Length: 114
Length: 117
Image 1: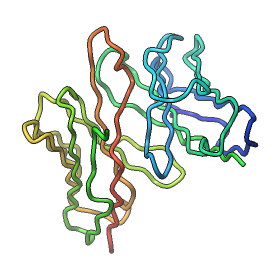
Image 2: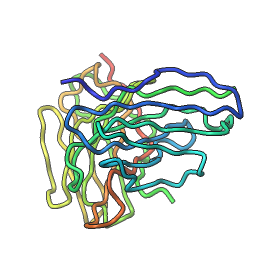
Image 3: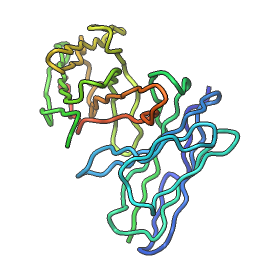
Image 4: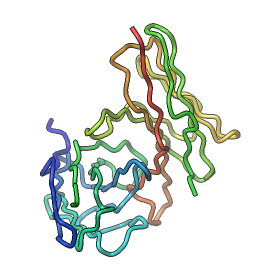
């Protein structure tokens, strides 16, 4: 069974640009969450999607957005990039959307803003 | 406000001995706890979890203990192996029926475990 797949693995963007990251969850998983990992802040929750609906959102500015497609694949977008957006962006998928269950993470996308 | 804390930034253990990683939380509403292992530039790998209705869960060399009154959980690795060297994160989740807590894990800052041969 394939794991969570994130593309691209590495990305370099210029300040002010926008970026789109992609996540394909484990087959059968309908819940997808996104996290940002930075050395100073650790792993921070961005948002969660289930059945193409955003059910939960973390404390990030509106420049961070996402969406989920009918096949459960998800994308996140960051507009007007800032240097502080440089981070490892992680996607996690879960099977049961209404119960506590483990989340499985992808390899992440390393975004560098210059 | 850090709701999940791992107060030890690092831990060094000899191969074959026990590794004990600790985690404290402040939100008594958390009802599910997880441990993840992470290598640099990779995503976290799920290790073991425990529901708040239990106080212990075992999976092979890994055992998680939960002390709800102390709001404390710990991960025991026995015996420790050099391949266990990584950063370990504890995480907590909160389920509210009909609420907006779905999918959110609150992570600690991590503990770097080094297992020496």
